[in-house]
Length: 136
Image (tube, rainbow, N blue to C red; front, side, top):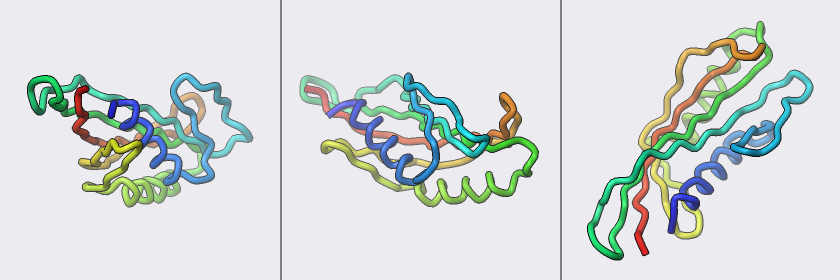
């Protein structure tokens, strides 16, 4: 089990939640098309802490999944509010996602104020998570 499985579980869940959205992911080519909505996904783990000492112990890892929702500027904030609420339903506190036997638990989901970035209206959504990762 590893941090890679945690990342895979969260990004897969985000892809399901944002079904039909063009998604920009880390180190993958992406160009927004046609002036429509799109989302950028950022997996941001913090440094692990020992949850159990010794060989075969486990590390507790906490982190954030940042989802930046992007819309054409000048159309208002209502769609961003609705889309945030949908994401909040997908990533509610206590939601658990698993990949290859590695689980990750959502702690909370919130958003910041919308802002204009690069000609787009952006709604930053932040999902806090934690996982126990066994050491080999």
